[in-house]
Length: 425
Image 1 (cartoon, rainbow, N blue to C red):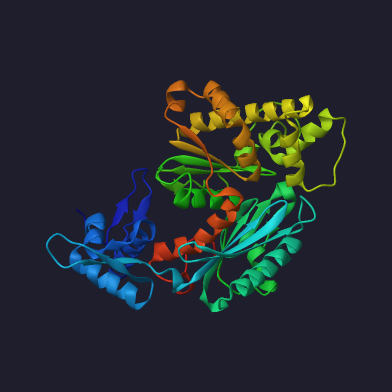
Image 2 (cartoon, rainbow, N blue to C red):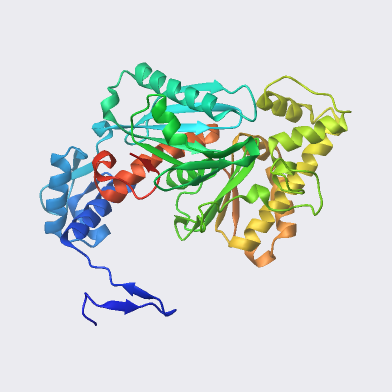
């Protein structure tokens, strides 16, 4: 082995500085490892924690004592041991703090409040007047919703560790966070700055809504236990979170997962992104309803998009036009899923989003059949296709996990430790 302070040469010829592991790094790693294990698999005894993490009994004892003093973990009863005294079980303390999750969708804003172990305490939802919502209007609804859930639950705002926000676009992280959502008319929206101007002072964590839904389903829903998965979001628009070896793939600019803007029909119908033939224009609720209106002679409706979509599904049994549009939609969706299977070889594909769940409840067998026709047989046979388990709240639940993820990553309160991604200070 070379000297730890020397510069090592990257295999492609680029000189990279060797990374030093400090005592502080090791301490943070141990805290993160034990806290994460207790969060996802607790309650556990110290003996079990040592066996599951590979840390020594002394390290586990010292670190859990620290976490207990900080009230991040608490005792959760006793378990019998082999021939000795009963062992104390430990778990993350749900009362340590609270987190909020926000779903800024194309049809409305949902705000939810949870304790640290994701027990929901309060929910509010506000519709937006337009499927192309003005950023300022959405921000006003978010700020109002946060005040409402905090008041409704009766908690002290000072106990909120952070607010996660899922948005219908890509998030450019950096000193000045910007949201790019061209399909709803948002260009370089300084979302955190706008929220601060509305009086929101809590730590903010912002990510794409499909990715927050993906994290929620991977932690608590249909993705749990899989290392390679694609979590699809189908609402008014379409997106996906691609999880490779347990980590969400983001790409060079964090915009990976724009599945809705892959081409399903060359030269096909115009998509709201400006291109043609995008999957979103065929399976997203807005595109599906547009095709249905065209089939019926262009009749428009002033009803909310979700109401119209529910009515379309209800009409399938008595309207040939409705049945044809929905069967075509299931076919396009199945073909799109076949593409995902061929590209990513996932163990599992999870279909979520309010429109995706509604379609899946009725057409999942057909979607699976078509996916099988368009995917390589030996890959398709190893892939499960399931409906999401978190329902229409998945984006907000996943968003609320962002400050929790920062807590687990740092092994400390994100308000003091900071986060590598998504935090506005």
